[in-house]
Length: 632
Image 1 (cartoon, one colour):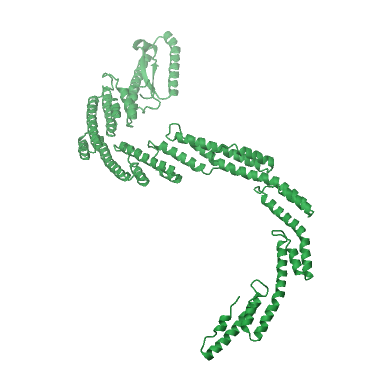
Image 2 (tube, one colour):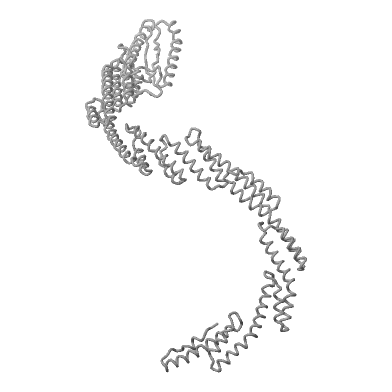
């Protein structure tokens, strides 16, 4: 439909001619609104002029000569009008209207314009556009002027829709192909062909599904030759999806299935040794099997069995307290196995037990928190519950000990006693009991030290004057400290020191008296006096040293004449008599060494004389004379 506006314009003629000929309708094309207005205004002015001229014409009778001229003008006007009308009609027939604006087309637009817009949309080849174009013309009756053209176009559009359906079936989308092909209406020339193709597709699809099912059954039974032969039947399918895509998929799946079964058998061979390393390798190997393969169910069952074996190994290592070994071996248990949760509970229990070995407050809290994550459905729940109770008890005991230690740090008898009472609340069978007893002993020792330190300080104060009475009082005070108490050794040392001081004060006059007698030359009296200092007293060693000195002086006085006599005998040549005389000085006496030296010298001289005699007489160096020497 073009954009021309058709208007009616009334051509007014003079009244005589109007009465004779009537009125004529002239159709003129108006391409502009201004022209349309101008035409209307011209028509109105002409009508006004006719009204103005009607009155004079009615009054003035027509003249014969002027009437002929008027008729000539009228016929000329008619001829011109007819010629203009013909020209305009020719132009309308030969000039093509401008194309419609399909983006703004009105629902009231002409069917020709709507058909043109439908063609334009269907040219994109999109399914929605094709379906819309068919819907536009499918309802036109056979009497419609554009029906033949519409049928031709409907056939083209239906062919495009059928091609889209064919593309979907080749892609393996049967339902999509059916849905697309059913968009071809019954009135389409291609409807019978579409229905025939649809039936063929459905029949081929059932056949392809049957062949595929048989291939799957053969693969499941590991009948690889049968599966391959069944799959080759897809080459005779009409649908390219079965010939190409599905056949390739089946062959690829067959290769994957073979590999999966091979991996499963190799993994089983590895797992027969039942060692952690081999079990881990077997689990890792079957983990590579694709989940959708037929071997995956058996592989998963084997993974569960091997994972269970690993958990048993971990339990044995846990009993041996090989906690690092437990954690290492449990790392290989996959998350998708049936024993994974139990394996994780073993990990939690192992970490908790290992942490609790530290026996610190933080470690016990961590251990308790760790085992709380073990649920009531776990096989380890009872064991975890028992361990948690033990660690909580240890935690409470640890808190008690730390509190007691904090109190004891004040280091006063009262606070130390409170700490002891707090530590004594730990039961005898508790693991912390030994540590508590150790702390209790230490704190009691500290109490005794504080108490005994005061007693010893008082004793030292009493011993200050250094008199016998003060020293005895100090000894009595220090004796209150028992020997098995912390300061017992210090007290005993102080007591020994003060007793020695007392003995020194008591024995000093006796020793001074003995020394005075010795100075006067009365050595025997001095010795008797010094021997009054009893053994184990403070001055006993000093007294004994003085006695030894004085006895030595007496022995020198006694033995000097003997040694001089022996020397005189030797000088006279009586070596044997000299030797016998010197032997009377016994060992332990002051001149003993001097006597022995003289004897050795004289014996040497005697041996020299005998050797000379032997050389002269050929006899023994000494006979009867040597036998006469009998040392005493």
